[in-house]
Length: 128
Image 1 (cartoon, rainbow, N blue to C red):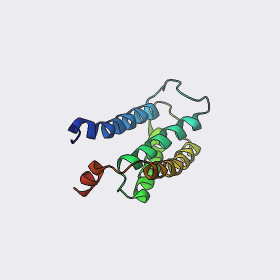
Image 2: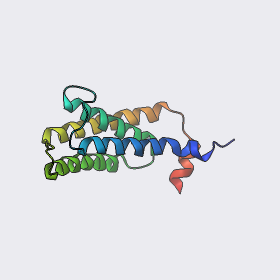
Image 3: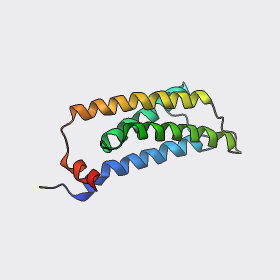
Image 4: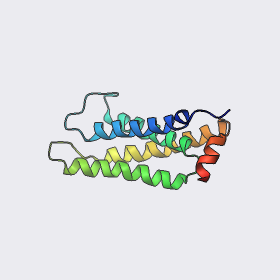
């Protein structure tokens, strides 16, 4: 019996909601103090989770493309912070932390794919 459509798209909607929250936190003028005291851990947690989730949610997509997109997003966030007029600080070490976590997240997501049973829903989705 196939699952209802909402259950098939709910994880992907959750991914995009999480992505939006992370983007807002990264670009708002005075972000709330969330997570670790060392902000690099917050960067690494965000990019690790996003990359691992994307790898599991879109298993047939190119791992190289995923890494390039996530590293590009991290760089774009830092450039936007540099240009924003309300006092956000762009730090290249934040981008390094994002990039490192992206690679670790890719490894974790790929390992999860090896451990998870294959899903026929993903096969049908990716074929389209």
